[in-house]
Amino acid sequence: MVRVAVFDFDGTVVRGQSGALLATYLWRHGLVSPKRVVALGWWGVRYKLGLPKRQNEARELVFGAFGGHPANEVDDLLSSFYDEVMADRIRPVAVREIARRHEEGCKTLLVSATFSGHRSQGCLAVGADGYIATEMERDEHGNYTGRVLGTVVEGAEKVWASVRWCDAHYGPGAWSLPTHTRSSQ
Image 1: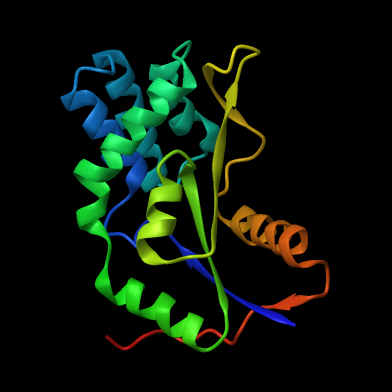
Image 2: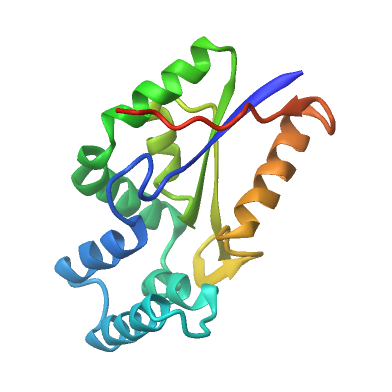
């Protein structure tokens, strides 16, 4: 039986919310329009107030800035974003907890509602065995369309996505989650 420990990326493994940090990064680099920034701000207000919102909307507003751009250019930009912004936000306590889980014989999985582009770097940086994140659609030429592919990995979907990932990687019924414990550090 494979034991799997699942960690939320934003706010747990890293300080902050990577989607908002990416939007700020894109704004500072002149890659999003003022109209898109206002729309993102309005989405954020509705989110904070618990008003009905479409989860795809925020991701599509951010990633829509990449519509029609070749995936390799976008992936390079996301890699730069990780190096310049996210790498310094990794929480040492999270790295230690992931290492502790490995010492216990667990596999570790990162889960995030934001885009998968920079998750692989985060996964490597903290020593996780895998990651799940919201995927963005590509057209027939490999360019990003700006639309979410499938379901946003948010809320209860994080649980279901983790189950699907574990079933695919270890087999249905061949894995378990250890009892949750929170590090006291």
